[in-house]
Amino acid sequence: MNKLGLVEILKETSGLTKNEAVAVVDVFFNEMSKALAKGDRVEIRGLCSFYVKQYKAYTGRNPKTGEPVKIQAKRLPFFKCGKELKDRVDN
Image (tube, rainbow, N blue to C red; front, side, top):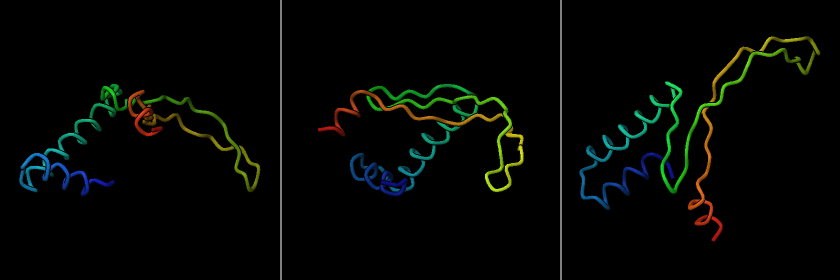
């Protein structure tokens, strides 16, 4: 499923217009992105949680030349599946 599919399902099940459904989906994902950018955790009970993991800078190696390469510190979003979602997918 992609964003357009989510908009269509929301439109059909809630009776919203397509523009209203697009606005709802956009607000949801925009606010989730903002929270993650601030370093907050986003939790959707029974489904999943998203959090940001911090990585320190380190020295890696270029696989072709073997030369050392500095890797900068970074923050990456992670997804953790909830128990109810695991159960639904497994059955």
